[in-house]
Length: 83
Image 1 (cartoon, rainbow, N blue to C red):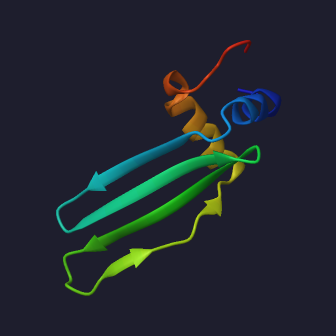
Image 2 (cartoon, one colour; image 1 turned 45 degrees about the vertical axis):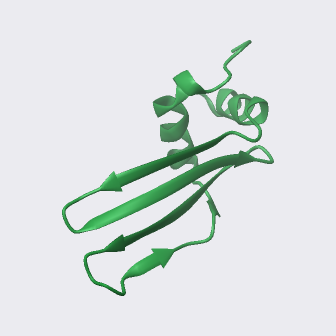
């Protein structure tokens, strides 16, 4: 998937939002993916087995590699008309 195709996908999926979770033995991580302004943003939050170990990070822009992986993995949920 070329950089041009990735950018077109981001542009035509403005406002797309996806929430995922990853539950493991001693921790749970939640991720929110959001496309805004032609960029993919990722926000993480979660907790571990320790009573006070909760975390939440502000949304950050995804790297080119993260964007590429996201678009390939969730391509079936995105609007791909014309590509």
